[in-house]
Amino acid sequence: YREISGATIRLSYDSSVRMPPAVAAAAFKIAESALDNAVKHSGAGLIEMLVNFNPHGGMLRVRDNGKGFDLGETLANPPGLGLLLMQCHANRGRLQLDVETSPGNGTIVKTGFAAEEAS
Image (tube, rainbow, N blue to C red; front, side, top):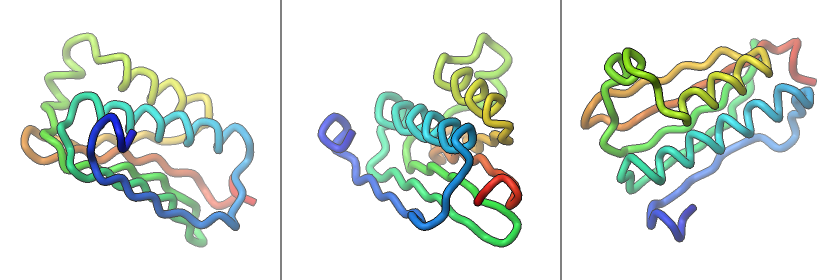
């Protein structure tokens, strides 16, 4: 992705925490789709991926500083395949998916899981 986009890509995660396979697979696929969308569509110079854990649960966040988009307009029309895939993966892993974006302000894709789902 770095070679394709020329963007700086940062990854931060705690490798000691393990997620159930269904949660891990869903989070990986969401991260992959978010990264793919950022590289292909956002024009971002910086993409940050964070996997964060706390006593209440965990969160995956993929943030880019790209051009963003009008989420309401995108959802009012048939949404793009990337958004549909992320929601499908979230549903499979029983994760909540949140997308924050607006034109000119980049995009943040977040998903989380409860502590009892992590081991």
